[in-house]
Image 1 (tube, rainbow, N blue to C red):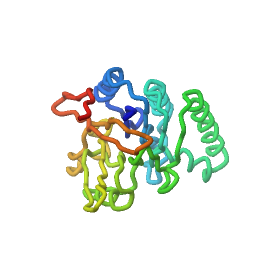
Image 2 (cartoon, helix red, strand yellow; image 1 turned 90 degrees about the vertical axis):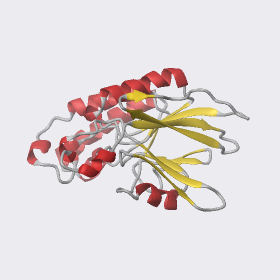
Image 3 (tube, rainbow, N blue to C red; image 1 turned 30 degrees about the horizontal axis):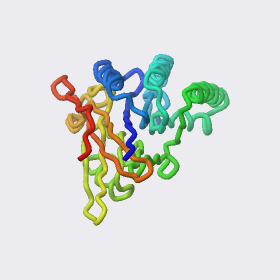
Image 4 (cartoon, one colour; image 1 turned 120 degrees about the horizontal axis):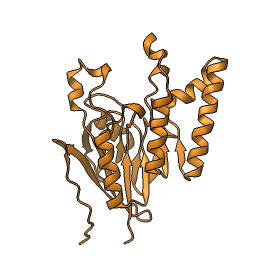
Length: 242
């Protein structure tokens, strides 16, 4: 059987990315050498564009955030980029912002699309239906549910899939004749940010990414979870079929 290697990374958040976690990702990519590379959303943070942004956040420049995300993309070289809810803020501004801000957003989107074309990377919107990527029988989304039951809700709706969004490493299996498992794959941003400094539940957040193999004809796949534990990563990189 012919398997292709894949890797899925999510939640970099531009200038909020964790340097050590991303260094581990790129070091592993050199070993794993995946055929399929998927960026599963929240490449950028875009704090000034969120609906409830503070006055201080609205005055922030997005240049460092944007450039950090684009530098990451050029290093990761994704085949697919699934926009996350943070990324989508730029597209929403282009569609619903005032004249000058909308024009600026359109210009930045043009730069993004040009860069992705150069990488031969397909981009999917943050959308419950159109933002779904299939590789074999496995699905990849950014994620639409939050909280401790996010993977359960995702498994009920989407079946077997990988998701980011919640910044945690978690999984939930749904009983059935065909096994359905949704997995949250962790994040590559800083675990402690200003907004979550007094939110103990965010101690669930963890650095991680997913990788595996897929047979695109039969649909069969296998997923491994990469996770940082006490500052170390232990990642199997050999494939044995019996």
